Length: 116
Image (tube, rainbow, N blue to C red; front, side, top):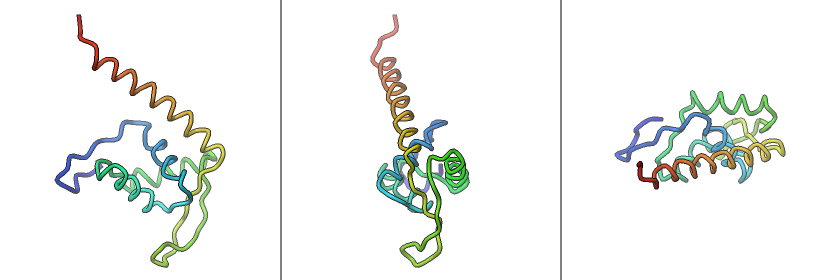
C-alpha cells in the first residue's frame, strides 16, 4: 500500500488480497495492471495493491488452481498475462467471503457493545 493521493489509504488485512483479486476476476479475464486499477477504482482509491504483492499472489493462485493464466494483448497492444477465475477459484471466493463476513460481524459486535 502506498499513499499516492491526499486520501488516506487503507492497509490490507493479511489474507484479504486473494479474496479481492478473486472478486476482481468475477467480471472476466484481466491482466495484473487491470486488476490493480479495478481495486483502486472500486474502492475510490482507498486500496492500492503494489506489484510486489499482486504478482506473487496471482502466481500462488495459479498454483492452487484458483485462476488460470494465458498470454494475450492488452488494450495498448502490449503482451500481457491474463488471469481467469476457475470453478475452484469461485468456490474459494465463496469460502473467503463467508469468512470475511463472519469477521466483519464479529468486529461490528465488539464496536456496538459497551464494556462492563
